[in-house]
Amino acid sequence: MNTTYGVVAVALVSLATLGIGAFGLRFSRTTSDFYVASRSVSPVWNSSAIGGEYLSAASFLGVAGLVLAYGADMLWYPIGWTTGYLMLLVFVAAPLRRSGAYTIPDFAQVRLQSVRVRQVASVLVVAVGWLYLMPQFQGAGLTLRTVTGAPTWVGTVLVAVIVVINVVSGGMRSITFVQAFQYWLKLTALLVPMFFLVHAWTDDGRPSPVAPEAWFTPFGGTDGPGLYLTYSVLVATFLGTMGLPHVVVRFYTNPDGRAARRTTLIVLALLGTFYLLPTVYGVLGRIYASDLLASGSADTVVLELPSRVLGGGLGEVLAALLTAGAFAAFLSTSSGITMSVAGVIGQGLSRGRAGRRRLSTIAALRIAAAGGILVPLLLALSAERIAVANSVTFAFALAASTFCPLLVLGIWWRGLTARGAVAGMIGGGLCAGIAPVMTIAWQPEGWLGVLMSQPAAWSVPVGFGLMVGVSLLTRADVPDNVSRTMVRLHTPEHIAVDRRD
Image 1 (tube, rainbow, N blue to C red):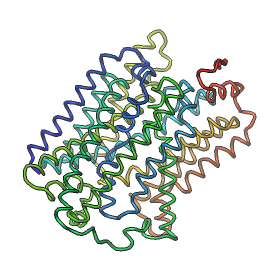
Image 2 (image 1 turned 30 degrees about the horizontal axis):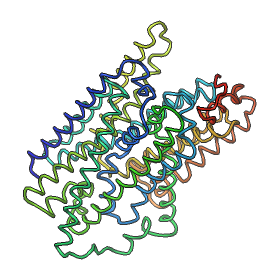
Image 3 (image 1 turned 180 degrees about the vertical axis):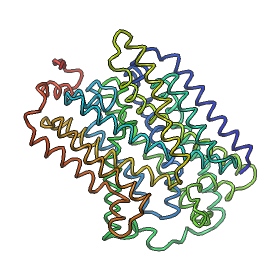
Image 4 (image 1 turned 60 degrees about the horizontal axis):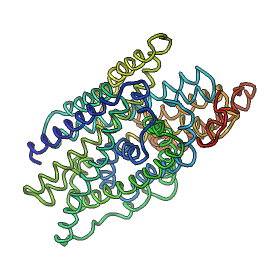
């Protein structure tokens, strides 16, 4: 790809992101503006922002790379990521909005009346956020190196700096405008080149890709390890979506529970449309770019195809458009994660400072955004790169094993206690957290390696089981105000009831 085109594409996306973020700053004045955009974001606007936030490096580059490398079985990832919003719609969206919380730890404390639960939830929000941020930064470095030849660290640092500027300047107001714009940019960036690529393929007369039978079999088999991996990925993606802090926090920005449900329905349509496109790129990669497998560069297939299939000026322009979309993916997802992490850390920093509550809370958010991004940034610069779609699955497994049980049981079971919630989050979190460490550091083989590579199928039941079991043993700890809290969570806003604690 022409280096000049690539630099221009990245520069335009970066400037547009900063400019839109600065526009959002004009509307950010209060604590509510910075944390939840004053709960005034419409379903259409919010769903576009969620689409921009959720469609990360794993979606834009990783899915096509996995389809290129492993075939149709990798479609379980986008299917699971999209269907997770159906689970969120049914079980979480509206009640969570009615809780009046700013973050998951806020909800935990409101529901269970426990500072300890809040503290554990806060630590897990940071852990999930950091685990999700690292591959975004790595993917940005990979993309910039591919299109410009710049050192990998340049793209990583550039994304981190832009994200911090937007979060610090306008908080959730700025991030909402940025992410909504970036969803449509990403969709356009994949859709327009795809028409040219498919047209060139049909004119070329090349046959459909020939692949071994395993390319069409879920995870290489229908029994044993292959079957386990399939279901474990589904559990992680179905249930992990409702527990991702940067996804959940967006539903606090809706005006009411009904708007939260409408937002989720629109998101399902937006994601379903988007995920058709990387699949096409992966299949075309089998025809035109199968050599990327040998070089370990399958994640770059989306960026490589225009130059290989079309060539000339048209290929360079379309490759630049894809580069812009890829860079937007890193920026939008990183912005949402940084916002969720900064919100939790910022609330912790500002607690107990009476008299200057509003000013100190906003200042704490800004400090938390700048400081909270340093750990994943350093990890991205120092850790060995792994496939972007595979790496975020660990974050999904951790969210599914901790926050999914907390939200589902907290919303739908009045018997949940603080000690039960803490036991489930710590137990499920340890099980899901040990897995990536063992996989990366030890690389176990056999069934142990399979169980560690995709832990959700056993770590999620551990989280649910501990929460239910310990809660049953500590029934006396059920909060006295649980009935009022349940009324608040499950009664539509237009019905006049007493919603006070």
